[in-house]
Image (cartoon, rainbow, N blue to C red; front, side, top):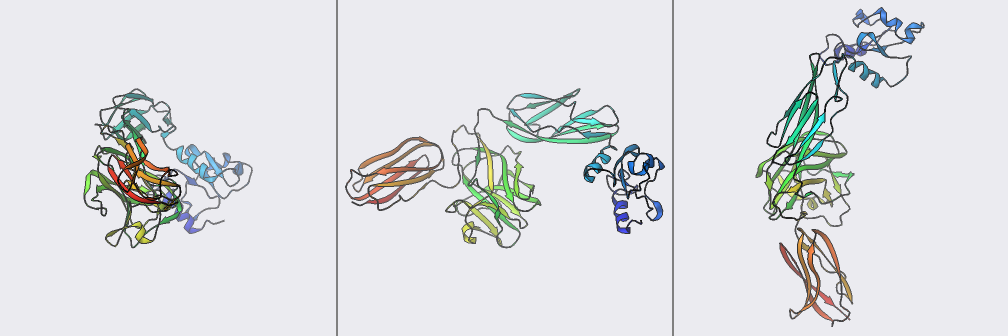
Length: 434
């Protein structure tokens, strides 16, 4: 049986002795009926090492590793892909056996990591180690024998750690993430939605386009640790940035400090973007993600589209609702508070909803959203400005809240309710009928 010329060409390009790839001469497909020119490796020793060869059966091909060990032939059993992997690994003097998991350290602390089982040397050669950490102001590392010691400095942040192992003249790298955190600080995921759907992912206008969510952190200073975004399709070299926001539309140009970079998006699942900058932010900002035309997932469970979702197309920003979409972009940020103000931040503005039902008799519900935890007061006044009922007066966490108001003992008429929070004071009118 003659192998098809295109099959032989593919073998030559990838596995042949002169191929321009990492696998050149390392994985051999052995055809038992000669390819033209017989330019594949050939060894009569193979005939005694394969069950097919040994019992007179003639297989079409075998996958052969180091020292002519046959890992697969078409008379064998098992997935071809796993056998190819074993054949490839047999040629390497060193490989990664147990990758190091991501680690977290408190400020000023150290941890020791045993390296003895991270790498394995196929030839038994002694393994030497090297650690590379770019953000030395956040984390340092040292190696003593087969122990890696990581030491956190006085700055919080997330850094990439490269551990290199060398044996027999060959070097391989294991990479992991190390986070340095302040044990006295509070970390939060800040987001609009939680029930994101890739089935409902959308794109807007003409590519390239962008998506953004705006946030108001008030006077609280925060440091961004990570972003998480969700796109339908895999795409490389997308851009993220954090810019100043004037309360009208996002701004592409006024990047805050060094808060910008690129990332590769996963398909159909969230992508974590590590932010290693020590830059802090406060006030109004926009988190912007620029794409060649990918589809970003939405949380469509929200009845009304919050004001912070924006899309960029044809050189202009527009609110997501202007594109006839409801929902919240799959954009989340994990932040650490650095100003010492114990407040949980949520996006958007403090809002006071119209009571429902209105007019009412005798009970109604008042809903509101506060953007920062702290003292909250919700009170009802009559048309003369006299206090009728104090519904809330105390410290509340940031978020959405609802309070019932029963006016059974009040006269019919017009009443006003006022919400007072650390950063807003809002009033609305309601009507009691009897």
